[in-house]
Length: 116
Image 1 (cartoon, rainbow, N blue to C red):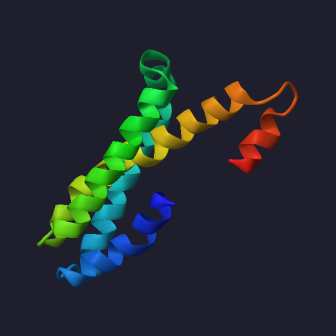
Image 2: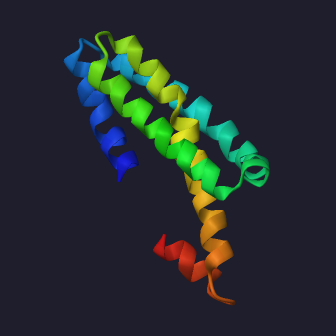
Image 3: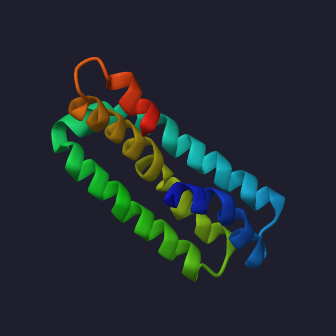
């Protein structure tokens, strides 16, 4: 998945442009700080915009993250990409969970979430 590509190769890319472990730690901090509140706000956001819109916005944010990593020249350019993690991970998965629950047959919600 897109999340797996970024989570596994972002630090390799940061290292390619001269990043150190310190830079990578700051990037992880930023991504965690961006993701945690988005889990909290993703419910109201999804109710306001709709599941489809939030999922599309999440995928567009992935495109921006990938392009940012592709063209970055300095390790701190990754901070923008990591700040978008709240949308790409938290909003995507919480909205996806809501959608899976919505389309699941009666009594099969947990199974749909397991498959997702």
